[in-house]
Amino acid sequence: MSQSISFQYPERVQLAQTPTPLQKMERLSDRFGVDIYFKRDDYTGTELSGNKVRKLEFLLHRALQMGVDTVITCGGAQSNHCRATAFAAKRLGLKTVLLLRTPNPAQPPATEANILLDYLADATVIWITPEQYQQRNLYFARQAEQLVAAGACPYIIPEGGSNALGAWGYVSAVEELVNDVKELDASVAATTTVISAVGSGGTTAGLVLGNKLFAAGFRVVGVNVCDDREYFQRVIGTIMDDFQERYLPQSIVSPADIEILDGYVGKGYALSQPAELEAIRDLARLEGVVLDPVYTGKAYFAMISELEKNPQCFGPRIVFVHTGGLFGLFSIAEQMAAVL
Ligand SMILES: *Cc1c(COP(=O)(O)O)cnc(C)c1O
Image 1 (cartoon, rainbow, N blue to C red):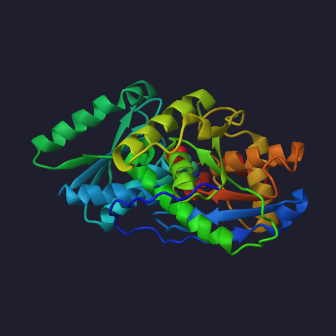
Image 2: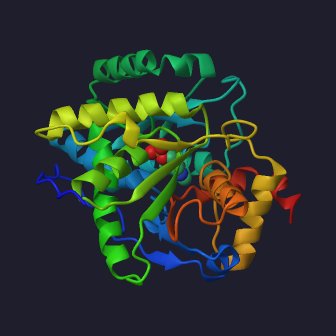
């Protein structure tokens, strides 16, 4: 194993309930004959639940340092990142402007689940089309201009909080995981495989970087819930390159370190098929754990589908990162009820 590298964390604001628990899924482990643990990042908070708050701790520290009064960010209509940002901003006395993607901005989706929470936190919501979202940097700049003209001072957070600074959130999570794994059965000496959903790439970038920085020796696998492997190798590669350039004296990771398990996007981003919803149902009943339909449900479905083909495919020990997203389930209540 290579030696860990000395580095310094950027400053952060404390927002997340960490360290999060690592829990063994006993019956699921028995089913496949391998040890399966969940890293409960859905426990990072109630309003702030999920993976985004780990990144926001670093991003919002920077925002405060710059003396801003408003944060602007973007995402899909039911974005967990936008909801977490809106609440984290309130904790710090900041305002939020959200660019949310919807097919027809003249007829935005119902005020439910994460959208309800966005409004509850008094976020200003601007609906934009998928085509406009493709050029979100333009819309970010326009919003920022308008805010400045109105006397405000905005800070732009990219989609999912996924940039070099945000990636520190999952470097820090690897530090937790290294400690978590130390407490486990030492007779399972082989590699631990860490599996998580990939949406905007910052979580996986942080996990891959942290894995090297702490010489953790994990196998890091990301399950893409949209786009494809090539796309995410590029996106995650860019975040990692930027991180290394900004924060490290030398390069420690390469694109070859990015392992994407492709083939489980299914019907598309935020679109569920019955088999995925049945997997969510079955896990709730087997272990008393709730997954979300957009990210963790798909990543979990991918994991068990691969385990069904070959129980040893991830080695003797798996850590599945439960990245949150629970509120998303309430936006597909009818579809979910159909499999209950
Ligand atoms: C955003 C999100 C992810 C994906 O994380 P990225 O850093 O965007 O790749 C996974 N799970 C949930 C619940 C999320 O909200």
